[in-house]
Image (cartoon, rainbow, N blue to C red):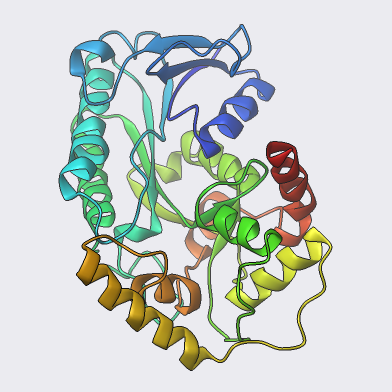
Length: 325
């Protein structure tokens, strides 16, 4: 039986990937920092260790055919600690790769991020190579280069998946914060700005992961993983309101007011020396473009997204309400 190692298995995407692998009759080992009594079925093997502690990783790749490396520190604000990103996202990745090389692992799939390159005001593909400027993006980009170099040197099948913003049940991150704010009625009505944001479902991430591991053509490649279509923030906002059972307001605040609030947030952040919830960076995340093409992974690996945000929002809202109860 094929055996896979999953790091970051307790995270939002990792849980879905473990379930998907088990459904495909693939044996699974997970890297966890502490024993997880209730998070995994009994047939999932748990290796207790930490990416930043090489000694704790010894033997983790023994008898493993393929590795799905999701583990990392995933905060993407510019004010984040560059050192923490390096320790976990770069050096932690180096530690797991080195151990997998020693254990003669055959395949290594690295889950990266669209933040490994800078955003642009147009739809971009893998040819776009403008270096990132955030600590998170820089660390992930360096980790990509390390993974590709080391795996190629040791004849390991390697593929890098740059994920766009991911959604699904048990939602986390910015989309969860948006859903929660809308539900609690403190998310201000936003204007219908025609920006473009790329999203992808957890189910489609799992599909991409399996294609990356199983298709010879994926070896040595980097792919953006996203739906074919993009969403404006206003479209996401409207879909979330609809799924929560609220009508879309007939009025909205003008864009210039959000710009003023962002400037106030910038000044306030400098005065109190910590990031306020809304500033220019948050404004850009809300109204800017983050638009990526899935053409390459579709053409080379046959990837086709099976779900849209509208499809999964009922499940997302249900899991959100169960968590809130």
